[in-house]
Image 1: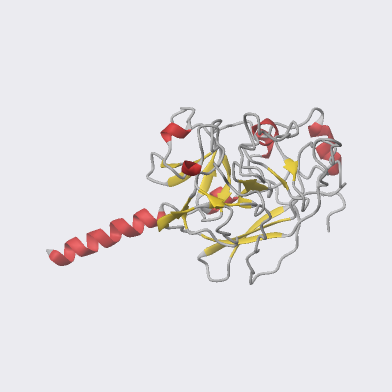
Image 2 (image 1 turned 180 degrees about the vertical axis):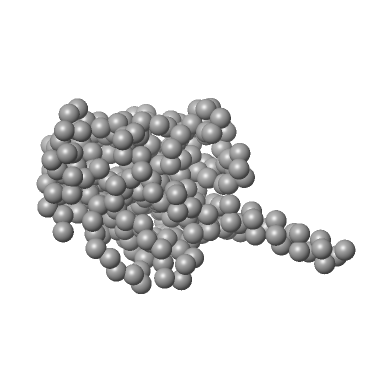
Length: 301
């Protein structure tokens, strides 16, 4: 009887762990439209491949937006250019909860489905980057570049990236999926519906994060162990550390520059853009379909 109980517990735990996995079907959400970026003239790409040990996914991208952007730099607003990057993150297929949650560092904390980085909710001065008197300027597609030229999002990039707010938004660097603000029952979620890290269990028992319209917008902390990034103790916060305006009280602004350590992959591949399964659900610029028919994959080796 005891043996049966032990085996039953082991099976339940195995199923519970497995259901947190990002599935092969979910990886099909990752891809780009093939639209050349107006500032650089480059085409964005993102790939997801299986690690040779079969237990991890390797996410790579060049960090070039696949949708319309403002003309950057924007004099008097943002002096930064959009620059091509070389992102590479190796994340567990089946992430697990850490013993303790981890704070959010500066720089990328996840990757959107089009290969662009997702940031924490704060600016370089540890103030709310999205709302209030400290809000930064974003273009019509809800992004902007930072000093190293990384075009990124601090909030859900709904205006250009998604038509369906219930679909997968991307992946956090602990390996858990990030979804839009509408759950599987059609309810628009707020932070009050989520835990401290901005996640919940869906109807199938799978833990996932959700982007919402209210602070902290994408993540509040890492529920699992983050991979491929440097956690600097002088600039690493939980959403619960913020005041009612989303600002970190008495935070130092001198430590905001972060170095992001890309994970080293064992598999090499060509860098052709990957077309996402949800391409035709995307909210795209006017006349884009005609544009796409001429430009998709143009100039890409």
